[in-house]
Length: 461
Image 1 (cartoon, rainbow, N blue to C red):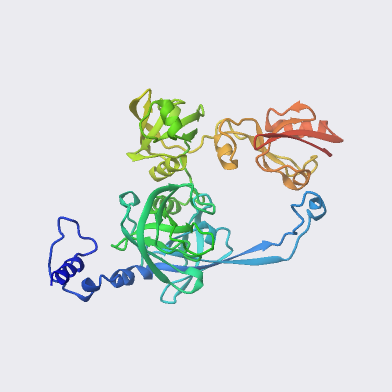
Image 2: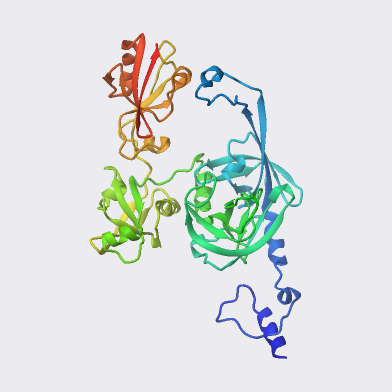
């Protein structure tokens, strides 16, 4: 009799009940007795869609990257091929705004979205970002669409019940359940996504990418993006991009942006491990050590110095550089963020502006004409915006190649190569590149910096 009473007590507790409201009562519905997710699934699944995307790519020779035979096959052009990808997405508004993964729809030439009731829509990508692995789509001629609301992912806690909804392996829409098994996961997801993730043990498989991770109230808390696996199947370690970042993507897409604009920190940071924490006289390892600051950094403007330890951004602790960038991205451009940092054992705070990478000095971009030694070669001054676009070091200056053009590419030049010398003369500005190339004929010697290494190239002009 006691065993039956305990069972009745357990099943009588609703999933969302707080400790203050939990009390013994007789179950009043079949759903309460079975603790079924059926009502929740019926509410949420109409807003989760299947996405079929295709793109046309040129086939490449297997010898193109070969160090011995690459030059022979450099101009090889095979037949165009169609690559298809399958994934999931989530409708976020009645007018057909959909979020998915970049690796599902990025660079797609044709996107078809299928609702769980069989209705089909064409879609276009409004905004995509490979680094975050997020894309915002708009359904054509969509109206009165089912949608999911966004919950602030900063309120999510480890242990919450969640459902993952998607289209694994193309078998059709499926639902799996689990819990939030970790927060602030950074640097652990596979693929192109980098940053901060929600970890879940709800089974996620190929095709679930871009699908919904929802809480027990049917609100979206994350977009499923990747798994850790050796076999290709789910091992119970999946990652979702938090809804707080999704909200920023939607806002920028509605504002007409086509690429995601992140705030620029103008700094490099280092994880504070146990050894570093002891050396700095800290307690438990925490925070991000400021290792370098650009002169134009908004952190420098706020009084933060090299050697300070960033502890939190807008009240949220940060322990890795990707976490810090995530918090800045969630705050958004044009706002101030409260930064708490440690200096000489004392906590301090500062208001830091969330700004775009500065365009100073001016790019002064130059593209060489058809009569040049290297026609189509495009160069510009390095400023913080250019350095961010090309992934250059924080302190990099000089003149950089933004597009090598056909002949320079054959000579071995790449975007991001920083020109040091041409014909033995230092390159000081983009305007000097064409005259220096002409003066160095007929055998042009060039020195470039690439990935921290200095390369010397020589070719006939």
